[in-house]
Length: 89
Image (tube, rainbow, N blue to C red):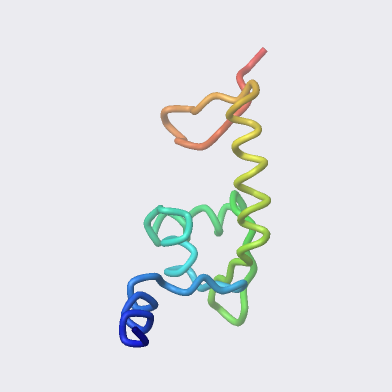
């Protein structure tokens, strides 16, 4: 039984509070290149530790909640930017 538990842990990656770009991109379901671009533009909450981007899981969760609230409200997707933007009035 212990071997089954050990094997199951290998299939599920550990989600840490502070993640590197690869872990965060897996968590968000986007490519590392896209996440790097979004972090550089300030679109997603991130910080640099040395010269490497780091992402707090709790901040990403809050950001995703805000983004989903925008999507449910009046935001639309701009086809060129592929990011949530408010429609022009």
